[in-house]
Every structure is written in C-alpha cells, then in structure tokens.
Amino acid sequence: MRCPYCGNDDTQVKDSRPSEDGSSIRRRRFCPACGNRFTTFERVQLKELVVTKSDGRRVPFDRDKMAKSIRIACRKRPVDDERIERVVNGIQRRLEMETEAEIPSRRIGEMVMEALRGVDEVAYVRFASVYQNFSEAKDFGAFLSDLEKP
Image 1 (spheres, rainbow, N blue to C red):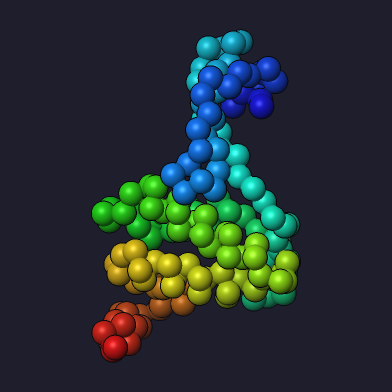
Image 2: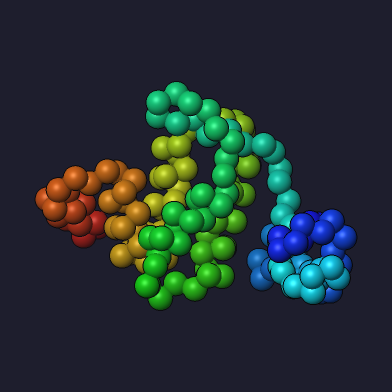
C-alpha cells in the first residue's frame, strides 16, 4: 500500500481488525520512510457495478460518493459514523446481490432514502430535497405531509 503522505510503496501493517458488522477489515499502517500512520479498509466486492444516469450515461459505481451524500444529509444530526458506514455497506451489499450489474441511479437514490428514513427523519428530508430536486418551499410542505401519512 502506497503511503498517502510521501508516496512510499513499502508501508507496514501494524494492526488489523474486522469492522463491527464484519463486512470489512480495518488496517492501521505505518510508513517507515516518513513516519506517518494511516488507516485503510479492505472490503469484499462481489461484482463491478455500473450506474446508469438519467441522461443515459454509464459510470462506475462510486461507494465514496454515496457515503459522502449520506454524510452530508446526516451532518449535525445524532447519527454516528459507524451507523452511516453500516448503511453504506448495507446498500452496497444489496446492490451487489441484485442480478443486474447495471443499476439505474434512481434505484440507488430510492435505497438511500429508504435507509435514511429509518435512521433519521431530518436526514431523510434533507436527502430527499436534493434527490427529488425541491425548488420551492411548498415542495417541502408536500413532502412532509406525505411523510406524516401512515
């Protein structure tokens, strides 16, 4: 593993442990060249996923992009990083288990919204406002009135 600080190719693993949900391995690494420490995560990837965008483009699935959007929705909310990581891992696992390797971006957005609804309603509304492209305050009102229905 290359050191992110100095680019040295020869780093050493100092500690390895499985994540809480067992879906990845966390490795603490040390670079003998510059003395810095850093963490890497190793995850199983069942298949290469391709996301089909609404404009027809096809792009590789970007786990980090999905995680970032979930973190933004959960910012300043009582949702810890481990919970977000479990949500991201769960969504990625479900995507990899689907029969098709090409997944519409809309499907991913729906899965994120479904997961966030169970995690934090404010994060759910924040994500929905971007995902569903709310343009006016009344869009929030309509969405919230649907949320309150059983």
